[in-house]
Image: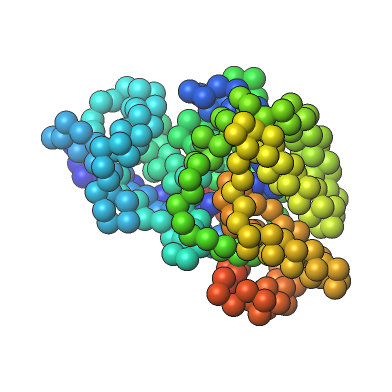
Amino acid sequence: MTEKRITARAHTNIALIKYWGKRDEKLFLPMNSSLSLTLDAFYTDTTTSFLPESQEDIFILNGVTQEKKEQEKISAFIDLFREAAGISTKIKVESTNHVPTAAGLASSASAFAALGTSLNELTGMKMDKTTLSTFVRQGSGSATRSIFGGFVEWDMGTNSFDSCAKQIDDASWDIAMLTIPVSTDKKKLSSREGMKLTVETSAFYPAWVAQAGKDLHMIKEAIAAKDFIRLGEITEANGMKMHGTMLGAIPPFSYWEPLTVKVLQKVTEIRGQGLPCYYTMDAGPNVKVLCRKSQAAEIKQILDDTFPENLSIFSGVGQGAYLLTD
Ligand code: 2P0
């Protein structure tokens, strides 16, 4: 077998309508459809190559060979491609996360989207992006959306073949995001565990599912109308509804820290001063702020003056996953 090395890049994405809960844990089928913005500031580069002589896959992340547990997780994902392509050769995966070290934003979304895009080429599958998104979904749900750029919808679908992503809009209309890193500590409860506990125990969960569907419908209308204010209002409300479900879980839990609340209050205050900006949060204490690109520098300055030890990171809109080698 000739030495073939395939490198792919995928950017991370931040959901504006959140994915929170699975209806099928093995196939990563979500309880609700979601919608995200792909970011250009944070991405993963992954190179794959065949290991014809090896009995095992090898997974190297940021230059460090990973332990068996991580390796097995990656091998199970590679198996999806091997089975589809009818091959059994072991594979070496070399991955580098390009995420500002202070941001605490290491993302399974960019990781599995980059790996899947690379494997799609290496194994000769050459699936179209929509089909590829159904494969990477089975590595991590949020990765489904990182296959595409701009505003991306992950349609919950009816089965494993139609639960896929599609681009809604390329978001090339004065959109940006600021990330305020509140804490870089490893979270106590992974998003996978957090959403499972919420689905199984939260009294608020059925309301979340109903609301997420309505919010998705409304945000798509706002995007079609390029209505930034409406987009922000729906984003902010949806994120808070997701965090509300966690307080209804047994035991209740929250990813918030005291500084999180101060940042949220500041964003509201900045908005009150006539600079439209809207917050959202994922399964962690960091705050992301949706704003107009043309006003991002001004908003960033106010945030950085207020929180000088937690400097915000600017991101423009990112493109979908792509091959770096050909
Ligand atoms: C999202 N999150 O839509 C939501 C909002 C976090 C909060 O997708 O179990 O790492 O691998 O499918 O994708 C993070 O969860 O979970 C996530 P798995 P994932 O972005």
